[in-house]
Length: 189
Image (cartoon, rainbow, N blue to C red; front, side):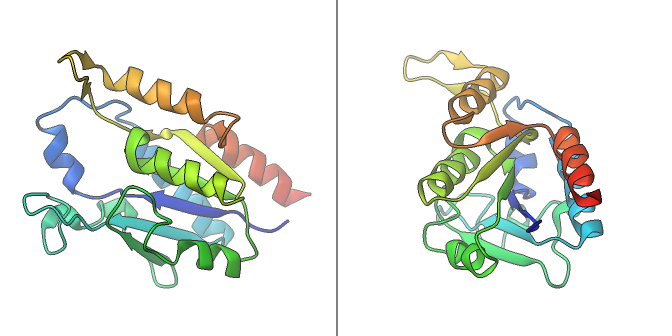
């Protein structure tokens, strides 16, 4: 079995600044992502960390700001790749596709933030480029969003709508626990 790649998208400290002002969903997302990361490291499988380098002057995700730093659990270890992007897709302006091609175009397992922005955009583009994408929906999160008419759409609804639109069309959607059980059983065969 060719080992899948774990793609961790934008687990960065800047989201704490946003969460202080705006409601987010799935408070357990980071714990589930840590479980995946630990599993991948124990298996010796490739991990790619994606970090957002905002070009916006006031963004907490700007390089040099504390918000640009990875969340503690998501700090890369020696040998783990870090891809830096400045747009929503981890494929644009980066060498992500080349890295995946060098690894033999493995299945790509995605977790990260936010579900409706960088995660969704990366999953869609990865699928359109021909990669087999798996979305770990319970290791992703997002925030309440304001519609053009001023209506606030709750984070849980935003998350659910984006997961539903990706499911089957752009990615296989599953949970962290289910995927780890499946991969563990497959590795034992």
